[in-house]
Image 1 (cartoon, rainbow, N blue to C red):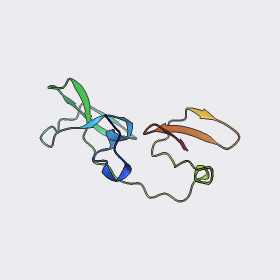
Image 2 (image 1 turned 45 degrees about the vertical axis):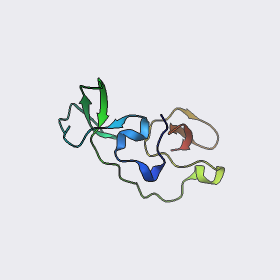
Image 3 (image 1 turned 180 degrees about the vertical axis):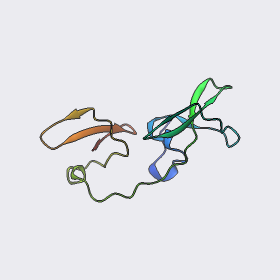
Length: 95
C-alpha cells in the first residue's frame, strides 16, 4: 500500500495514510483542525477521510533550502538548529 504523490491525493486523510470515505459515506464522526472531517467505514472497520484534499499554497519555507518539503500539518516531532520538523508521507518536512 503506497502513499499517493501530492497530485494524487483525493482527501486530507491520505496525507497521513488513511483512505478516503466512499462518496455516499458522509456521516461525520470526528473533526480535527488539520485533516478535517472523519467518517467511519463499517465494512472495512476503519476511519476514513471526508474533507477533500486542497493543496495549500505556501511561500518558500526554510527546509526547502535543505532539500526537504514544507509540512502540510503542524505536528512537531523534533527541533534542531535549523527549525521544527514534522513527518508526512514517509518524509521529514519543515514546519
